[in-house]
Image 1 (spheres, helix red, strand yellow):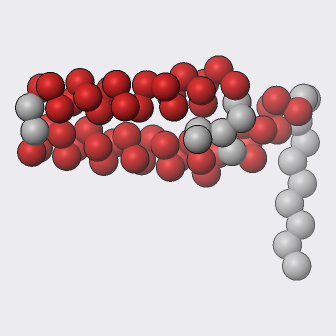
Image 2 (image 1 turned 120 degrees about the vertical axis):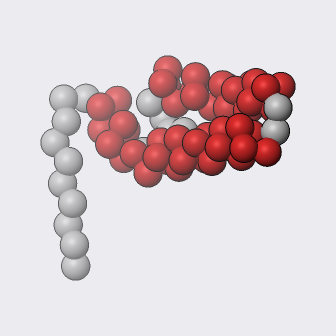
Amino acid sequence: MIKLEISCESADEARVYLNAAQYHNLISDMCQAFRNAQKHGTDADVLQVVANFYPDLCTATENSTGAY
């Protein structure tokens, strides 16, 4: 059995740690999409990646409730 204990100042701070995997997934997905758009697409494709990920990035940074 593994027991994990996180000591934080607030519930919001704890949510950041608990959602770290989701944040990592969001960043990884965005990185892969940028790579593909740069390698195989046009500048318009890169801008479309920005448009697609912008709402999720805003949610992740403003609410600390997870990336998705």
